[in-house]
Image (spheres, rainbow, N blue to C red):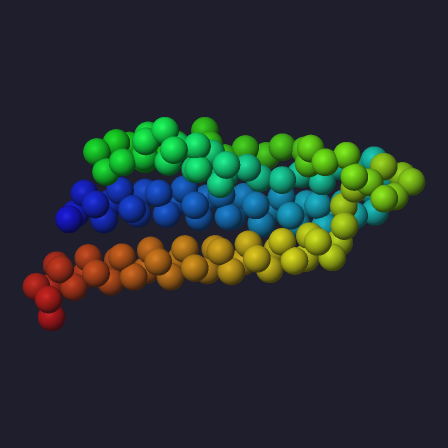
Length: 126
């Protein structure tokens, strides 16, 4: 049980790292909304996670996710409705920021629940 809990905790930590980084990247996009030629950045993590799960690299006997799976890339979409080449849509970025905050808080609640379970086991179920 302990190895299962630690494995889950490790993967949740990777998700938290990705959400934290995504928050910073979205904030950078918002800060550069008026910068001519700025191309919005995105964090790729879920794609890596999906790939790892399909190939079976994530299992209880293995090391879990590595930091190599979290990447910041320039938005591949060439959609820029502005003449100055900036492709940041402030409304979209604000929605992404709100969704990311929910994701981060959900992961925090999950890891706190896991620690509560571990605390209960250590105390002998009391």
